[in-house]
Image (cartoon, rainbow, N blue to C red; front, side, top):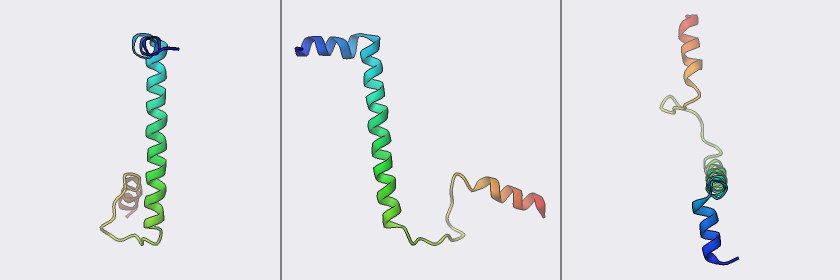
Length: 68
């Protein structure tokens, strides 16, 4: 398979564009998993403080305020 036919397949056909998109998603997912593992390894003993925030904690605070 020469370079011209591979280029034509990857950039000029729907199947090739889909393959490029799938490869990009897999590479990004792999990079995210590796970076998350490294971060958790570095900060494994991190204790939560009042200054910490998270995208997923917001619902808990609203439930606590509503129950008061």
